[in-house]
Image (cartoon, rainbow, N blue to C red; front, side, top):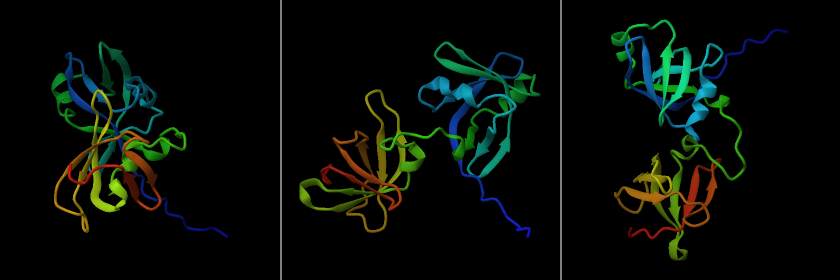
Length: 187
């Protein structure tokens, strides 16, 4: 018996951004969000399911040459050999399907897994909803959670919390959509 199956829509994860043109032959500079930056090289070539775009509008793209250049990455977009055409790609994100990401250890998370979690402070023994993780910021010392107010949060303040497991971030329950932090709600 044949079964009609519709594949689930892919969930895209942004791994880089095209920042500017490089040279005159269709090359661009790429800012990688992977850690380390050089991991981005694993997602180039015709076999990669790399896509470009913004939001929910994604289109396939092939980077036929990618290399480290100084402290960054430069790439050539297949079929683009003109600086002005390459410029039209600047500012666009590069994404992969989240299933292509390598598996992490049990206590590690990708940023996209933390976004949307409700953040509860258990500071001083009282549980208080601070809001939801909107996004993260990379800093030199540690990543920072940007927590925005949500329905039921204690106030309407945006908070910046250092993402330091076991010091400030006590537990993460991805299935429940919940993170517990040891953070004074007055900060």
